[in-house]
Image 1 (cartoon, rainbow, N blue to C red):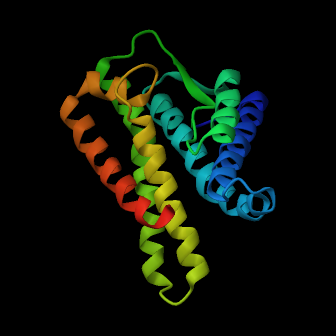
Image 2 (spheres, rainbow, N blue to C red):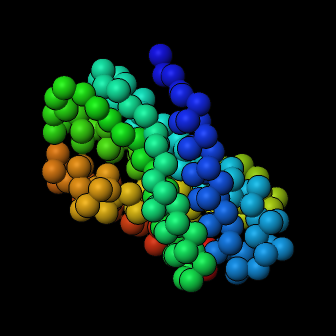
Length: 197
């Protein structure tokens, strides 16, 4: 059973608010009124995408018998706020799931790592599919296309194949799986640019 500490819940909520706020600010054209109007959608789309991404890591790690807990990364919070304020890019890494165990194999680490980006890819495709369920509702379509684009970006961002990112661990585990996943996320992100920008 997956359990959450009070600190973990607090850290997830703070991270979700920061990520949603950064996306809302950038995609509103950095207009405060538009940011406030876009924030509820950003909380559902970007906030939920971020939280489910991290929880996927936690669930898979616990499945393998490891201790796993989400912890905020203060420098990542600051970077998310500063980078979105001075550019049109979102640094989407306000924290991470920290995993501890006696011995984590390369295979286990790769599968734990890929669970996050795959969660965002699935969410992106779900949002994209909803567009066709409501062909006459432009507002729902716009929100869902936003969800498709944001979750595609979150998947691609986390697939960076170096440093602390998921992509580095996935690449060490299986370069072919990394390449396939990164290609899918990259294509989806590229396609979403046509209606997000």
